Amino acid sequence: MKLRWAAVALVLATFAGAVSEAATFRVIPDQTSVGFAVSTGIASHEGRFDLAWGKIVLDAERYAGSIDFVVDAASIDTGWGLRDAFLKSELMFDVERYPWIRFHSTRLAFEGTRLVAVDGEITLHGVTRPVRFDVTRMDCGVDTVLGHDGCGASVTGRISRSAFGMSFAVPLVGDEVALDFVIKAIRVRDEGATQPP
Picture 1 (cartoon, rainbow, N blue to C red):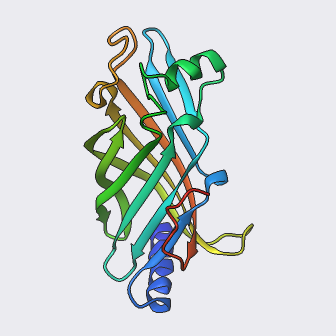
Picture 2 (picture 1 turned 60 degrees about the vertical axis):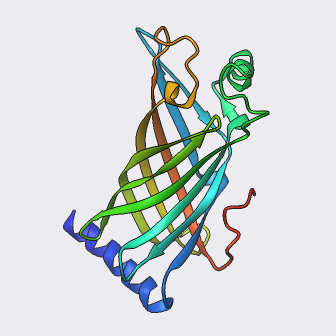
C-alpha cells in the first residue's frame, strides 16, 4: 500500500514539474459510470445514469484542486422503460425542468499524498445541498489504451432524496440513496472540459 501511494505521489510530482500551477483533466463519458441504489424493504433497487462528464483540476504541488461533474438526469437506466419514464416524470427527477445533476467541489481532503474525500455541493431537482464523497481508489499515470496522462477513481457517497424534494413513496421506498462513481479522466489543456460531449 505504501509503495502504491508513493507511486501516485511520484506521478503528481511529475505533473508539478510539467505545469506551472495545476493540471486539468476531462472526464471521459463512455468510460465513466454513475450508479445508485435505494432500499425497497426486503431488497435493494439499483440503477445507473448513462451520461456524465466534467473537469478535474489537480494542483500537484499543493495537493489541492477542484472537481466539476455533471450528470444527464434523463440518461437514468434501471432496466425497465416504464420505471425509467416514471423516474423522469415530475413526481421524481422532473427532467424537463431539471435536466442536469451538478456537483461542484469546495474542498479536496488528503491524507498525506492520498485523496480520501471530496466536500462540495450537489444540485439535484433544483435544490443545492452540501455533500461529502469518499474516494476509495485513485490512480494516476499513463493510460495504456489512450496513450494519455490520466487518472481513474472510485467514489462513493449517500444522500437523502427527500432533502432534494423527491419524497414520493417515502418510507415505502428508502429515503437514503447510495451513490457509486467510477471515473476515468485524461489530461487536457482546454478550459471547456465541463461541456457536454
